[in-house]
Length: 269
Image 1 (cartoon, rainbow, N blue to C red):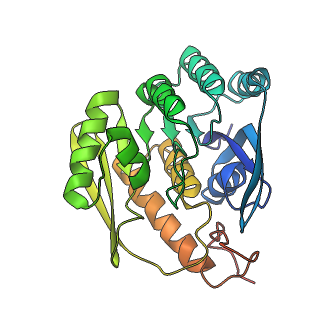
Image 2 (image 1 turned 90 degrees about the horizontal axis):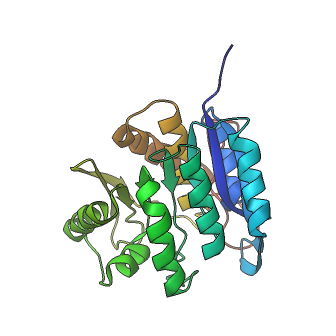
């Protein structure tokens, strides 16, 4: 019997469809995977911003995970917005119990693109200790890396050093995203199994970047589920995100910062 690569996305819901679990499902589907989902939080948001967040009860998150992993048996897990220390602990325990160590891609969603903290400091420390050591890859932005290390990180060499230090501390791979770097060139830095790789890309001017981090981490997850080694999975995911940004940069979806165009290979309106 045929089988699609199955990716379970554990994240918050974005009712406007640009980020969160909706972006995860679109990305996984666009890249030829089968997307399952566990919702951790329901957000009230659109292209103009987030108005409210409701975190689901821990027991409901646990039951969703159990329903999927005991039946569909996903190849890879993608984690996004967790929401609370209690949910993080439950997720960590269940994924460890069902053998998902080093099969997890985690976009930690700690600090927003604008630099706004989305978690209190105590929770950040707890989530790092509980989830990072189980991951194949963690994908923080520069604001999040600076918080994790307690110092500002900017520039390619500083990113390489930071990636190595974090990987040694938590025993997993790190992809440090350089979208906040100034200038026309941007770098992402990957450290994995004592190897350090950098990925250069040209900055694309666009108002429609909502959900970029969710999209990248989900694309990496589905590529890993297809059997690609992590450095190649990251390269292919970055190529997909770049094309999705280009395809969506002139679209008007909403009145603010719109999403990427996830189905980039399909006809445009």
